[in-house]
Image: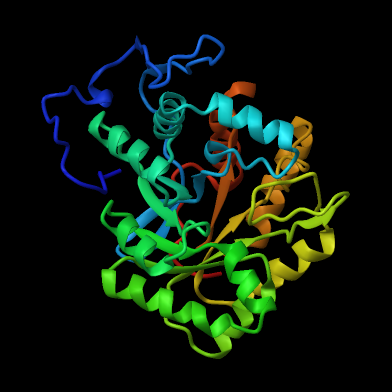
Length: 326
């Protein structure tokens, strides 16, 4: 796994992979007595994960997702708030180092100032994960946001799925192409996020210039009180099997790389170890051999990264790479 990012300004800092069998104490930027700081144990990696091409790069077929880092549980306001309280900058960095140890080489997250500041610190401390960034829809100037993100050297940028879907419903989907052109001009892998198979099919039919899709296996539907995925304010969301079937069909029909997210239906498909295994097995049996999955974790509830990585190694084969579409 090569470092993708700027040169470390603090080159004299010891690299984490040179320290073995020792505990590293991670101190939170915001000292809070009620916030547990996740330690990073320094020991050899648990084994390689299968990788697939991503433009000139290679990405592991399991990517750590960033929704929990930003407090988006897609379960309840209470859990979202709990994630915000837990995921201090120190705990996010510790989670990323744990992802490296588990064999992952790529992370996905929002491209806002909070996350980019964390990425700078993570890289200064020796972090190696490649970054795929999502546009921050709360910002008024998306093109400026894309340029800002590019300054932190992601390997790919994609247009936020909820915002893409809003453009689709408004009949303004072609406006998104302008933002994709900005990404192309900046030299990153160009991506389009969506929860709607129709968006992928439209982009393919009209030969949009992009490299990958960030495709949600489910299209979360508001249930209970009015809510929306774009705002992150969630009371209850409905995840329908018919949506998963439809999106998988679309994923298999496009030759472009698809990064499948919400394979666990925001935790609804992982309430037991058996459910978790079935969800991963279903995802990898359904997507193309050249695709990958993006899965967020909540490390307060156990080492979910290590558990997910072990499942992927068992299901896909350790180090087995997908270079050709099957």
